[in-house]
Amino acid sequence: MFKIFFLFTLLITFLFSNDIKEYEPQKEFTQKINVAYYQGGDYPNYPLFLKSVIKSLSDYGWLNPIDLGNEKTAKGIWNKLANEAKSPYLSFKKDTFYSLNWEEKRRKSVSDEIIKRKDIDLIFAFGTWAGQDLVNEELSVPAFVMSVSNPITAGILKDSEKASNPFIFSAIDEKRYKRQISTFHKIIKFKTLGIVYEDTVSGESYASLNDIKELSLENNFKIQSCKVLSNDKKQLREKIIECYKKLSTSNIDAIYITTNPAYEASDLEYFIQDINTHKIPTFSQVGSSQVEYGALMSIFRADFKYLGDFFAQSIGKIINGAKPSSLDFKFDEPIKLAINLETAILINWDIPLNVVAISDELYQKTLTKNSLDLKDK
Image (cartoon, rainbow, N blue to C red):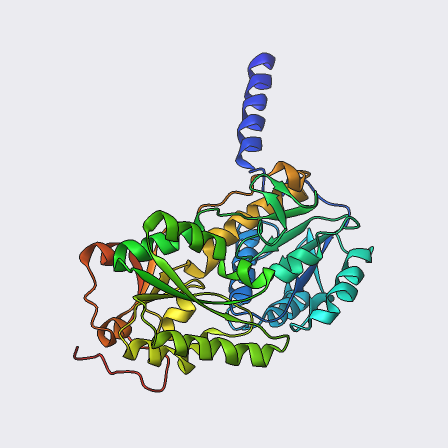
C-alpha cells in the first residue's frame, strides 16, 4: 500500500508540475520585479501593443486582470497600472515611465538615467529610438524592445538569432514586410510602386526600404520614392504629407504607405483623398488604423494579440530565469487583411473573392470629413 501511495503521489506531482508552463509563475518571489517603460514618443501602435502584453501577462498569472480599455496613451496605461495593478510579482511605478516626446537631443541623458537606476529590474522599450538607446554595454537588466519595424537594420539585433546586447530581447519577423508587399503585388499587380521615407538610417529602417528594394527585383516592379528630411517633427510631417500628394499625380500604379513617428493615422486625411481621387490603390505598412482613415488595405493585427502574447511568454520565461539570448527572436505574423470598402468604391476596385476570403476586418466608412454614405451601396 505504501508503494502504491508513493507512486500515486509522484504521478499527481508530475501531472500538476507539467500544468505550469515555462512562461507562468514558477515560484514565489521575495520582492517584486520593478518594470520600467521607455519610448521615443507617442505613437498610435504603442498603447495597443502595451495593452496586449499586459493582457497576456494577466492571462498567464503575473498580475490580476485589469481593465485598460479607456486608456488611449502609453502614459495613461502606465499610470493606471501604477495606481491599480495587483500582482505579487510585478511592480509598475509612475516614476519609471520615460518618454522623449521625440526630442532627439534628450536620448542619451534619458537612456543613461534608465540604465543607471538600481531600482529597475526589467524594461519595456517601445520603438526604434528606445531600442537603439538601450544597446549599451552598461545595460544590466532585461530589456524587451517592441514595435520596431526592423530591429536588425536598426542595429538592435545583429541577426535573427543574436542581439546586439545580451540583455536585449526583440521580435524579428524577417518576412513581415516582404509578405505585405508581396501580398499587395499579387492582388494589385502594380508595375511601379510609390513610397515616402525619411532619408536617414532610422527612416529607411521604419520604411523597411531594403525589403522593398529586394522585392522589386524579385517581382520586376519599379520604385518611385519621395524622400523627406528635417530635424523638426512638425516640418517633417508636412513634408511627408506633401510627398504623398506629389506621388498621387505621378505615373505610378500603387502606393505603399510607410510608417514614421512624425505623423499619425489621422494625418491621412490630408493626403488620402488626393490619392483615392487618382484611383491609386494603397497598402498601409502600419495596419488597420490607417485603413480606417482611407488606405485601401493592410494587415489586420487584431490589436497586437499575437505579438503581445509572444512577448508576454518571453517575459515570463526570463522572469523565471531564462536568459534573453537563449530565447527565439523569430515571430511569424499571420496574414489577415483589413480592407476599406469605401476606398474600394472610390478607386473603382472590385474586391476579388480570394481577397475577401483572407479579410478579417472590413471598414464601411472612412474616418474623414468627406466620407461617403454606403448604407445603400
